[in-house]
Structure formats: C-alpha cells, structure tokens
Image (cartoon, rainbow, N blue to C red):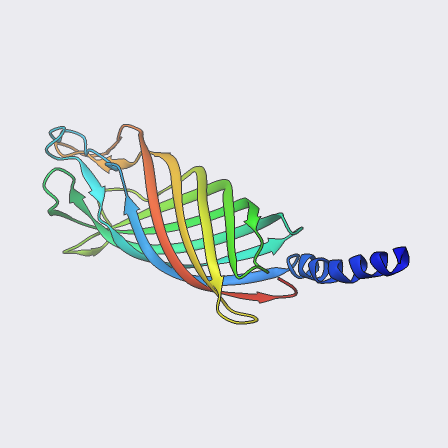
Length: 217
C-alpha cells in the first residue's frame, strides 16, 4: 500500500516538473501600444514658464520583447520600442511645430507570479531603460533647434496574458520609463545653444502583443 502511494505521488508530480522545464526557454513578443508621456519635456530658453512648456503628444508605439526564462520564477528580458509624435504646448495642447521620434531600449529582470505555462500568466519586471528623443521641424523637414539626446533611467512594469492555444499567447502590458531629461536648444535671441533645465519624466506605455515561445516556455 505504501509503495502504491509513493508511485501515485511520483506520477502526479511529473506534469508539474515538465511544466517547470517548459518555463525555462526563450519567447518573442511583438507588440503595439500607446506611449503616454505624463510630464512636460522642456521649456525653451527665454520662453514663458507655464505658457510655453512643451510635452510629447500621446502617440502609438511598436516594438518587440525578447524573454529568457532562467527558471520557472526568474528570467531576463530585452525590449526595443519606437514611437513618433510631436511636441505640444502642455497648457493648451496645440502643436508647437516640432516632430519627435522616441526610441526606447531596456534590459530587465523578470519575476513570474504565474508562469507562462499556466492558462493565465502574470509577470513583474524592472531594470535599466534608455529613451532617445530625435527632433525634426514639422515644416522644413530633418533637423530642429533642439538637439537629440539619449536619457538613461529605470523601467518598471507588469505583464500578463492568456494562452490562445498550445503555443501562442496574448500579452498585455503596463510599464513606466522613469528618467531625467535635458536638451540643448537654440537661443531665441542669438547664436549658440543653451541647455534646458533637467526635468523628471514618466513615460507610460500600454501594450498588447502576441507571445511566441520557442526553445521551451
């Protein structure tokens, strides 16, 4: 009787072990979403505070996330994203005449609250992120009175999703890039450029994508 109970327990544990092995692999998640800058980006030298502060408009974003599962609980993740919008006067919401491209890149540690082998999975992420702004004059084309700059900071987020079958999953994500940004801007009254004040930024991204696992997971 005791041998039978031990054998039954061993058989019951086999699926869980197999699921744990599948959770250590690689997955690719292409995504679409919305990039929502929550704070004012810059105030040009000589401009009027509160009236002339500029922020990036809410804009679509595309990108992809590559996930490496090191265990059923812990993994590493790399993410690249691209957005294209324009600068608007933050007080009134009208365009200021400057287009902006935003490139994001990050490396993250992930902690799985529910692994991707479950019908519903949930993951917390956190790490180092980079955000690059490139500016163009909306009327004259490439080039702007604002120099491009890459800012380094942190990124945190939560991702979840549902399995749509044995392989593909639907991925949903909410994340925030936190960093300090300053820019070199052409002077309004003379030659040369002046650095703007450094401003804390909080760029929120709401994402939806398809998760494609391979080599496990």
